[in-house]
Amino acid sequence: MRVLGVDPGLTRCGIGVVDGAIGRPLGLVAAGVVRTAADTELPARLLGIEQGMEAWLDEHRPDAVAVERVFAQHNVSTVMGTAQASAIAITCAARRGLPVALHTPSEIKAAVTGSGRAEKSQVQHMVARLLNLDAAPRPADAADAVALAICHIWRGGAQDRVARAQQEFARKVEMARRARG
Amino acid sequence: MRVLGVDPGLTRCGIGVVDGAIGRPLGLVAAGVVRTAADTELPARLLGIEQGMEAWLDEHRPDAVAVERVFAQHNVSTVMGTAQASAIAITCAARRGLPVALHTPSEIKAAVTGSGRAEKSQVQHMVARLLNLDAAPRPADAADAVALAICHIWRGGAQDRVARAQQEFARKVEMARRARG
Image (spheres, helix red, strand yellow):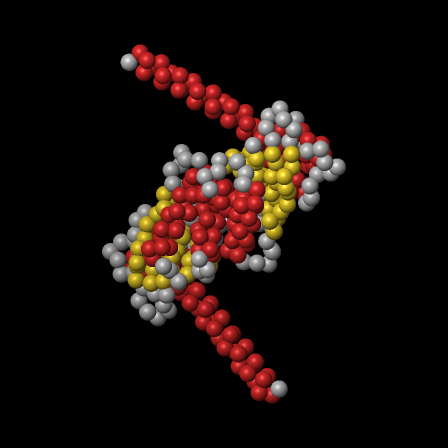
């Protein structure tokens, strides 16, 4: 399973692509940022994020996209831009029919460090260790996006297994109903 | 000049299309809303807004798009969805190369009523009067989008005249420079 994680932002939109499955080693495919200039008008910045996101999706063909969930109460000065960048990333993925999942910062921290209140440095340390790298990808936004992709592989995988089990159960119930009918 | 105004929202995204120019009568072309169901997942809702916006742009071919500027401090419970819907509307317009302007709620109120602190009902009353209608378009989100389009025709037109005058001045300076050189 290949997951593209997005740590949304107008100035630096972190992107991380990870291959993996539960119980298998994780592999870093690519990490980086889509940047837009702070002195550019908002329409051009959003268009730049859309074009950057499309290029990443074209190049890496992920099976799923995970985007960090944005909350209104966090950092009021940048939250609007973050929400707008996340909308663009989500829509680019949805337009291609890719499943899109939102994970909260504490879910991401808990997935990679075991604690939802871990420090940034601890998350970066674990990202490097889990991917068998000497250091976490740079800049920090790229590392955060990689952590999000890992979180999705582990959580999303579990959610997928539950969904498949439910589908299987429903199928058996339906078969039993037809056999009786 | 045909302006498409957008009052962004996830549940009801108001849209109003107005023809007009400074010193000429205004004409309402169309008004309505793009709706998405509150019980739908965010990716599908954003995609629905994108598709709705594309349909309005295809049908009415505006010369410019005006979107209400969203502030973080307003109504924290819905502001994230509003910011995300606005990002989609802005990007749809920017992708077509259309000029996109953002106007604040008080700029809109001041444009149509003369007061930046006018009541909603006063804005609706003036929208109906300015467009020579018996009543303002419904629902309220559609009327707000129409008010925004009117605001843009009056304010944007003035901004365009200033920009044209500046270009003309720069052109004359350049011609004078060449004539001397």
